[in-house]
Image: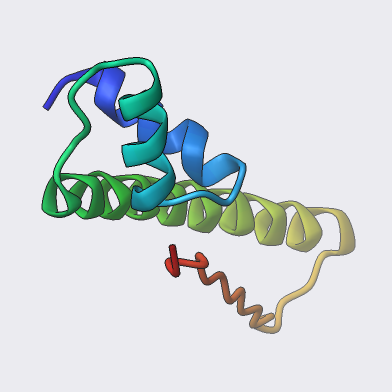
Length: 87
């Protein structure tokens, strides 16, 4: 898959738009739109990467708290993120 498609999906998801908005936009500018399957695949790639980044940042934050406060006990933190996939 091309980076432009990934960037396109990222841009649409950033403004909380999905596949139907992608079809409309592509139709308006007279270019082929990605299939729904391709769009969902790109969404899943973005979700996977963003989850990895979020986990890394949270782990770094916990390490920083431990370092600054000299905590020996385990601190648990959970983050829930859900994309609005309804289009």
